[in-house]
Length: 68
Image (cartoon, rainbow, N blue to C red; front, side):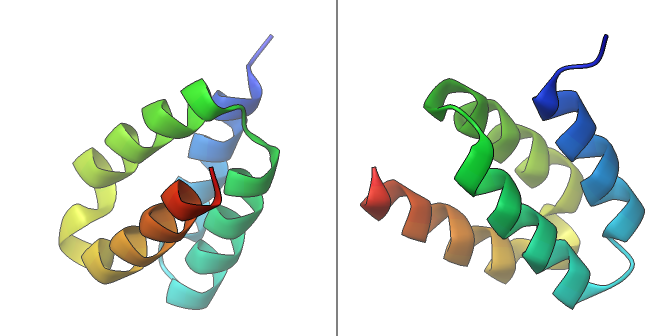
């Protein structure tokens, strides 16, 4: 059985062609994941999407850090 984190990674890959969809799914993911999974997701996102969505990643992960 896949974990929520693995499911979210799959979704992000599938919507990565569209910035708005990517942002929407990332925002949703940050709301439902546990803090330790958010850290894993952050690392994974920067490894896979840093070149394309660096600004988006910085924006959402910075906001999420402030919310913790």
